[in-house]
Length: 191
Image (cartoon, rainbow, N blue to C red):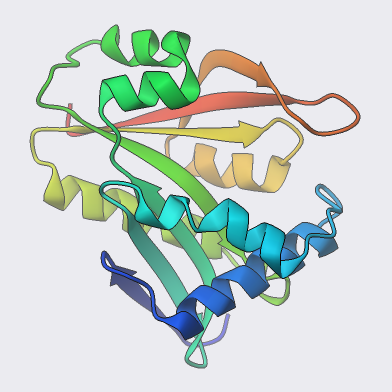
């Protein structure tokens, strides 16, 4: 692995950072044997821009040679917002976890993305480990990470499992063709 540097941003992205993320997202979706989705830059912008203004948005990146090579971003929805976006079943699941309380911060992990030339170098795991450490420090009363992964994305699933993520048992239909399932995952921090 090349020399890398981790950075944390919890404010607006610069135009160059945003364009680099769009580039990584576009190439990762096109070149991945899992996705094979040829997206225009405008389509990627339409997908990502609403995510970057969510309450509690935070971005973690790994840079190689002063360029973003991988990124993870998340936000902090309320239970009501989680239910509105992801459904009652997931919100009810969160509330029923042992030791869950109103003091626990809900974290929605939106994306983990690695540039095609940087894949298979442990960046997704490094991002998640940094993410978990950030949450342990910032939310001593506890945080609940929730995310969604497509069931055939084995590389990202293996990395999540290495970081202690677990399946909730809740699945939804993916909009992918042929039909595919998405699974919801969780990880408890400090509770």
